[in-house]
Picture (cartoon, rainbow, N blue to C red):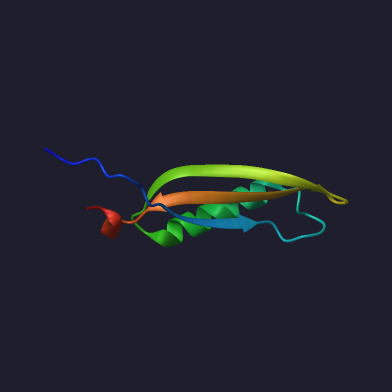
Amino acid sequence: MTETPTHWTVRHFSQANPAGPGCDSVPSLLRRLADSVEALGPAEIQDVVISSEMTEHGPWWSGTVYFHLPEDKH
């Protein structure tokens, strides 16, 4: 029988569009996040959270990717 862990650990990284004009481009943010996920190699993606804060250039989009790498398995 496998014992259930008492806590979980997950890796993560966050990225945002550059501040200023263009910070409101969701496609740019998604491309940026996708490139970073591909660079991880064989990662298991647990979650992706997209958020924004309002600026004078419109919403400033950012994203956080939560993931596990193969060596994280117990």
